[in-house]
Every structure is written in C-alpha cells, then in structure tokens.
Length: 305
Image 1: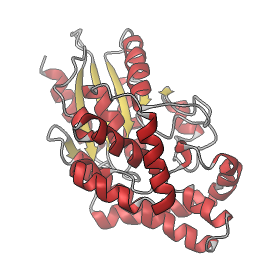
Image 2: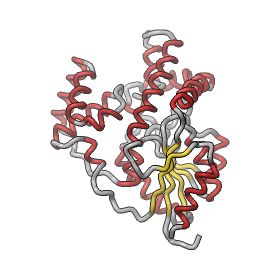
Image 3: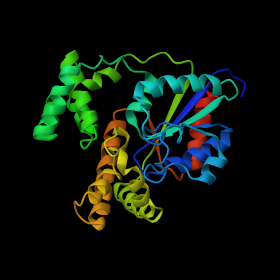
C-alpha cells in the first residue's frame, strides 16, 4: 500500500451468520489483527455461550477484546469506545488495515461514529424504575419504552431489565429518545471504515442457529452456565443462553425446554440485530462464504485513494 490512510474493516451481522470465520480469512489476507466488537466476548469464563473464537482461530490471527476481563468487572459501551480507539491508534502504527468483527450494534456504532455522552444516572429515578420492575415485571416498562423510543424498542433485548431501565431513564431525564444519542453527527475518526454485513436467507440462518445451540450444549454450555450461576444477577449474564439455563437450574422447566428456549430466543435476537443493521445504508451485504468477493470489495475501496 502506498497510502497513509488507515482502514478499519468492520464485519458485522446477526449471531450465527459466519462473521468469525470470514473475519479470519479477511484478516489473514491483509495481514491484519482482529478487534472483537462484542459486548459479551470480552469476559472470561463465557467461551462457549458467547461463541468466542476457539484456540485454533485465536492462533491464526491476533485478537483483542476476547476474554480479557472478569465477568464481575464493569464494562460499558463508552468504556469500549475509549479502549478500542486507544488500541486502534497503537495497531494502526504498524498496520494499514485492522479488522473489527461483532454483532453488538451499539458498540459498532460507538466505535465507528461515536456517541453523545449519556446523562448521569439519576439514583432516585433509577430506584423507582427498578422497584416498578420488581412489582409489575418488565412489560409495563417495555410499553413505556415503545412510546418514548420506538426505534430502540425494536432492537433492545427485551429480557434484559438493566438495558430497558437505562433506556427509559435516559428518555425521561433528557426528554430525548435513547436512540438519538447514537444518531448525532459522526465523531471525527482518523481512519476510514468499510462495513461488510454477513447476509443469509432466513431459513439458512435459523438452521445454523439451531445447530450451533446443539453444538454449544455438546461443548459444555450447561457446565459453563453452572460455573457462572453464582453471578447470575450480573448484567453480563442476562443474555441468551445463560438465563434460560439459570431458570432450568432454578427448577423452571426441563433441560430440553431450556434448550428449545435458547434456540427460539437466539433466533429472535438475530432478527433484532438485523433490524438494527438494516438502518445503516453504508453496509455492504455479502454471503459470508464469498471470501473472494469480500476481499475484492475491500481492495476496491482501498484502491480509491
């Protein structure tokens, strides 16, 4: 390459769509490291349930933000943005291209475009909303979120009380939709971004998801969830794959029912991810098996100096 312009290639898409394998093939072609943009893969002890790259994949390409902190540690989207930008400055010192891969839409937005500073937590409001959830469940707060911010309501994890509570409190405090904090004029970045989305027909994606859940169970997901059970109230563990097994451990249903719920909820999560990503017209959607096409697309952009 004969340019000083640095390039971040972001490979994104719904869970189970082949992002990891594609990112490794692309990274190896360009001699690039990989930065994980996943709000759960950063934690240790969650390798199976978060589908962290395996030992062979990690050995193939240097990875960052994979299992690099304890599940008990706090790590927000804002924390990720700052740490990732600091890391990118270092990586771009020795690489013209860095690959980022993940399905956490908010984290990808923060990395590529930045976020407005969210208002500080209003403790009284937070306590009131948490108490409301304790009395009435999450459904009334979800209806309030749908009224205050229909855009974020479509994509939010509706089984994650902490995210729902935070979104509603930001709406009430600021008088603005929570989603508006990520729609400001893009923050200035000293690198360009190429976004590649992994697209599969719905029936193919859902079949892959079902098979992956079965593979996770065979790989020890139940054992992993039991080891994490003492921390089940942590936000990092309020996620698909763990909460269904935690309910099973608590005597709510059978193991077979828990596995079917994981499959169903993962499919629903993938649908919400796609809803989020489809709003971004800059994403180039590809079949994840078309490595040569993806590389050609990237090289085409790199060639436009």
